[in-house]
Length: 165
Figure 1 (cartoon, rainbow, N blue to C red):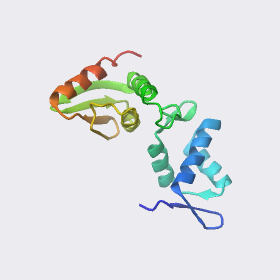
Figure 2: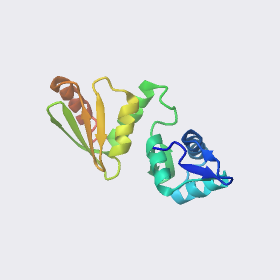
Figure 3: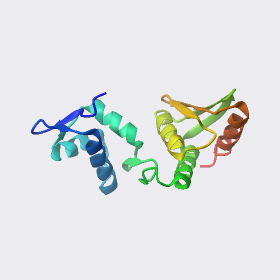
């Protein structure tokens, strides 16, 4: 995939890292309420981007849309605080998780529609030792453990977060 997916007014490539830095600053300063608002702000900064590229950037950054606008699921600490990331992940799980089950060494987490990816990003950033990888769909997240015993540990951990809203 091309890391220069957008161009500025003078048609010079704008690196993905620059776009994403701009998005982080937008969310920190004044959370945008829609992708259309984000596109306007990017254009004001001289960055042209397609809606699909913007959606990928928002997903890659772990931003989720709330009633107050887009926000960073890990509180903006950029992955530097694993205990804080685990707490953030658990808060998200308490809010959005609807069920937990296990199949062998896979823990299957059901979430509110559209939020499984955000939960997966939060889980990956939290770097839980029992999780070797995640796969997310719209409302379902698979968390793979190295063995069934550790999958059971994960299952119990996430079940403990259900219903604690």
